[in-house]
Length: 462
Image (cartoon, rainbow, N blue to C red):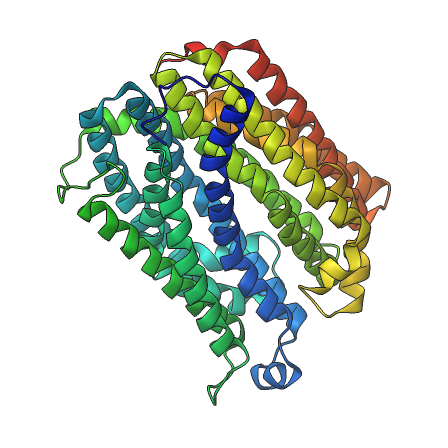
C-alpha cells in the first residue's frame, strides 16, 4: 500500500479498491480492539447465579463495576492517542514522500514516548483509581470491585501503550494487516482466559470481574510484546533500533500534532465524566442500560473508526506525494464506504433493539430502559460516520486542532446543557441523555464537513 501512495488513481473502481484494501483491515482491527472490552462486558453481564452467589454480587453490579472501571481506561486513551495520531501523520507523510530515514526516526521516538506514557498511565491508575471512581459517583458496592479491576489491568499498561503506538506506526506506513493479525491473537487469548475465569470453568474458582481483568491484562500485554518483537525484527519497511536516546526535536513534532488530539479527548472525557455522574444519579438500572447501549453503539461505529484510521494514512501519504486533490478524493471515498456500512448497522439497531441489548444483559429492566436510546443511536449513524472519517482525514493532514474545537462546541456548548435540561427540567431520564447525545453527533458532523470543504487542511505544515 505504501508503494502505491504516489501512483495515480485513474478510475472510480481503482480508487474504491485502493481505499477498501487499506480500510477493511483497519475496520477489523477496530472490531477486535473493541471486542476485548465487549468480551468482558458480555461475560460479567451474564454472570451465572451460582458464581454470583459465591462472589457476593449480582450481574448488574459486575456490569456496572466493569463499565466504570473502563471509564478510566478510556481517559488513559487520551495519552495513547496523543502519540498515535502524531506518529501516523508523520510516518504517512514520510512514506508518501519516500523519505525512509526520517520514517525510522519517527518510529523510534514514538515508541520512546509510548514507553513513558505507559509508565505514567500505570501510576495514575494504581494510585488514583479509587478516587476516580469516587468522583464519578460509584456506589459503595462498586468502588472496591471497580478499583481492583483497574489495578489488575494497570499491570500491563506499558506494553499496552506500546501496542497502540506501534499499530499506529504500521498504519502510517500503509500496513493495516499487521495490526489486524496482532489483534486477532489478543482477542483469542482474552476470550479464552476470561471464559475460564469469570464463571470458573474446569474446576477453577469463579473470579467474576477480576477474571475479566486478568484476561484483558494478559491479552493486551502479550499483544504489546508481539508488536515490539515485530518492529525489532523489521516489517513493512519499519525497523525499531534498540536505542532509547530521545530526540527532543522529533518528540516535539510528534506531540505538536498529537497534543491537540489529546486536548480533544480531554474535552470529551471531561464532559463524559459529568455525563456519567448524571447517569449514575438515575440509578443502577439506568447506568447498566446506558453501558449496554454504549457497547452496542461502539460496535456500530467501528467501520467509521476503521475508515477514519485509513483516511488519515491515505490523506497523509497523498499530501506527502504532493497530491492534495487525490487526498480529497480518497477521504470522500472513505466516507461513502464507511458511511454505508454504518447506516446498515444503524437500521439493525433501530428495528431490533431488545435482542441486541439482551446479548449483554439478561435483566428485563435494563433491556426495557435501553430500547429507546439504542433506536435513537441507530438513526444518527451516518452523522457519526461523517464526523469520524472526515476528522480522521483532517488528523492525517496534521489539522488536529479543528477536531478539538469541534468537540468543545458540540460537547460542552450543546450536549451537556441539553442533557441537564432534558434530565433535570423535563424529567426525561436516560432518553433525555441520548437525545442530547444525538443532537451533539449531528452538529459535530456538520462542523467537520464545513472544515473539510474549506480546504485549509491542504496547506498545513507538519
